[in-house]
Length: 462
Ligand code: MLT
Ligand code: ZN
Image (tube, rainbow, N blue to C red; front, side):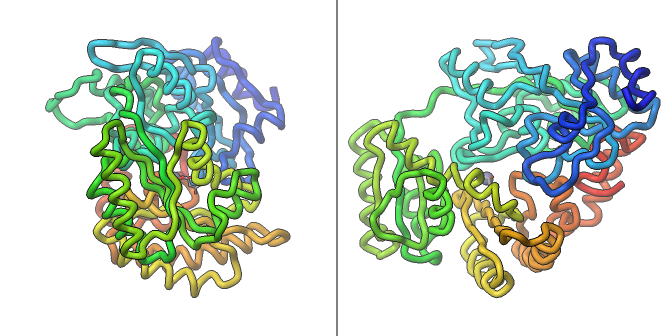
């Protein structure tokens, strides 16, 4: 063991597993951003809440910074350890602890993959409805730390809506049980919500009690081809007015071409500039008629130029792949990612402004647009040209993000809709949160993490 402090860590938490091999430091020290060079002190893998508490107490005694770590599928650098931090991986704490049929809650350890949570809920005839493409790799604790969104927010809301209770170890080393899975609880500050979306800067989520719900009604998936960007929100309004939407996602032809190059099946013979994939409840004739009415109304207006509706689960999955495969298809370009949101009512003006802005600002790069448009959330992925230095590329993209952040400020939007601030968007936090708000956030951090050891440098500098 290279660092003598690590033996004292093992003395403090004998159940802990420690990894210090260079390959492990590299593996656990980075997330999906691939922008920073991992350089953690070591990787600590606790098996119990007591182990986690012992690690945090040890870190306080030795003033060692900690990076809580789930599946590291984050896109904002929130789980990066590039400065000698101890990575606290929840990987071994990955089990379901309790199912309560009366409360319809499932209590799980924080390292459980999201997909395993889905499966555990399904075994009980229920669903945990937060869902997105990295479901197999991300950990539930990480989704809580970023208040993750995904493809079903339009119907079910963000992670925050589904967390009934949390057990956390604060940065000071105290174990707190937050909200006791109560539905109604007006007894003071709801600290659970402080930890949701705090990106590991206040403490470590070790267990969560999530709410489950009934399985959705039968649904159909429809892929729509759109002739222009301007009609997007009109199509959304036409569908939302007539149907109970489970998802409403948008992508450009450029995104589609990358997914097709990655092995997906071509949906239309002709090329169209924009596409929407939408899922909606069916099950009776009225609903099916409403779906056709929405489609036909859009065709008549010239807002939609073609469409295909799923005839089987396999076809529905094929259509979803066109949207869900985008992140993976773009990964080799090490994209610079924007993940922005505005209110739905502000979307038309914001989209028009952003399209003009980015058209002018990015003539040199390929820019891929997609996102959860029904939630007012747009993903803009700028692709790094082969051979270009990452640092040069990021510098150029950041100049554009400064303009985008100014536009978001004007439209009262957010620089991070669902990926979190992490390291990537730290410099733009002020476009979304006032100086007074950030001062309050810093004060909260000082209380829960008095020595500033929890994921330092993420979200803001202290
Ligand atoms: C997605 O919705 O596919 C991801 O959150 C977006 C991204 O990879 O930028
Ligand atoms: Zn997304």
